[in-house]
Image 1 (tube, rainbow, N blue to C red):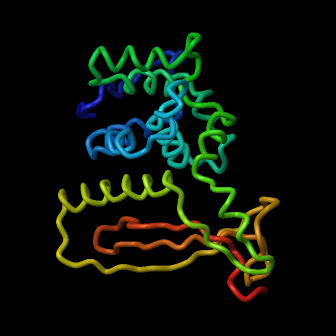
Image 2 (tube, helix red, strand yellow):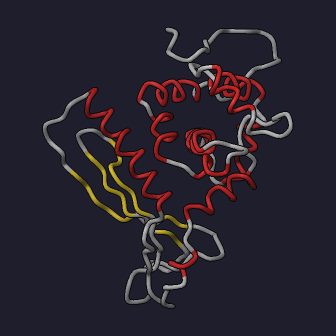
Length: 231
């Protein structure tokens, strides 16, 4: 394949060491770099930056993006990415690509001990995701009714990241028409805290706004499965 902007290449090898079953993911990493997605994460999200240690916002968010692309169904599936030796080596290398020496050293100083993992552990990701949750909003829930909490500052930052990604798509392939399809979709779940939807099973009901001509999601809002007014 033609070399992209990041320092990796695809090649055929008979050796087993360093092989990967996730060879398609680096192409998405290339796209994230070209589209400015990784830079947008660093500019808008400040959850990891405020901690000064451990994983950065870019590392956590991109790990979750790659996990979804790899077919992961839960945070614990990060072990699939970490367990793939070849992919882990690629990820460790490209995350430093193009960074000046000062930034590289700053990343190294975020770890008190030698860093061993290529992606965050599930426990580290769960701690990170707590920044997107507001317990005070949850206290406003009324039993038997759906509730949409006000977005936290971290969630608003994610919205801004997505706005930049959509703007990149429009700049590359301009569309004069924007046909927007807004729909709430039931997603069945087995989470203990999930509410029952109007179809009679536990579910979440995210509201998604889709731009037909660009084939991109413009906005998405997480929602309970239970509709207002009860079962």
